[in-house]
Image (cartoon, rainbow, N blue to C red; front, top):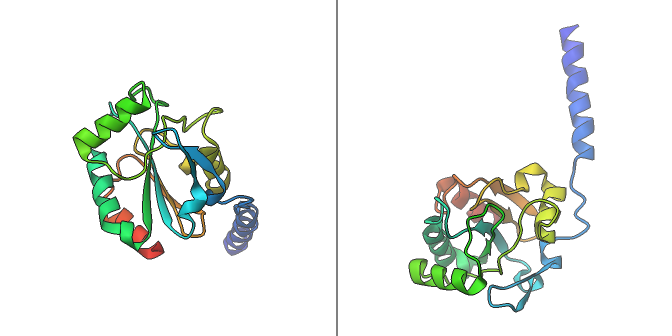
Length: 181
C-alpha cells in the first residue's frame, strides 16, 4: 500500500511539474529600460550574453556588494557577462536622484558596469522585467531586499536567483556564471 501511495505521489508531482514550466512568450532581450543617464537601453544589445540583474541601493547594509559586482564585471565582461545594476527605492534605501546614485557608485566603488535609472522592482509598479521574471521563474525572482540577484542565461531566460546574502564573488554564483558562459 505504501508503495502505491508513493508511486501515485511521484506521478502527481511529475504531472504538476509539467504545467509549472515557464512559457517565455518573451525573453530578457525583448525589454528596454532607461539608463541612469536617461538614455533608453534596448536589451537586444546584450543578446547572447549572460546577465546578472541586481537591484541595488545606496543606504543598505549590503551596499558594499557594489565592490564585488565591479570585480565580477571586470573578471567576466570579456567572456560575455553583463552586470546590470538596477538602483531601486522599493525598500526605501536609495538616494533621491539618478545623478546622486551615479556619483555615489563612481566615487565610492569605481562602478563602470551599466546602471539603470532608479526603478521599482516589486509590486504592481515593478518594471516589466521584474514582472516577467516572476511570471516565468516564480516567487524566487521577486526581490525580498536590496542586492537580490537574477542570473539570465544566454538564451535570455532566468537561470537562477540569489538572495541578498549571496555575495557577488561567492563560489556558488561564480560556478553558475562560468557554467552558462
